[in-house]
Amino acid sequence: MKCMPNEITPAIKTYESLIRKLKKRDPLAAKALESAHGYRFQDGILYLRYPGYLANISARILMDSEHKPMLDQVGDELSIQVLME
Image (tube, rainbow, N blue to C red; front, side, top):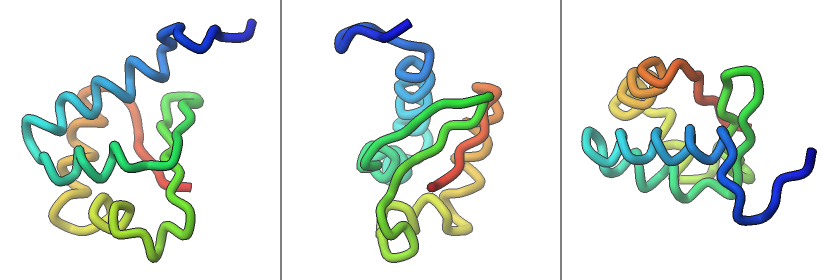
């Protein structure tokens, strides 16, 4: 079944919950997450799209040793895993 453009899907709810929780704990990681060029949610994994993610500063923030543990902790609370593609 196709989604209507204004329909709130489970993927949107999960993405928004992740951002909301991160804003309280790690605002820089939340901003980096919001700058993703897109995302998809499949089988409990939230895939974030960052073109050329090795050179993308937002993707690098989410992968560094300071912010990645917080992203993983919030993901665990939501029972999801967050990966870059």
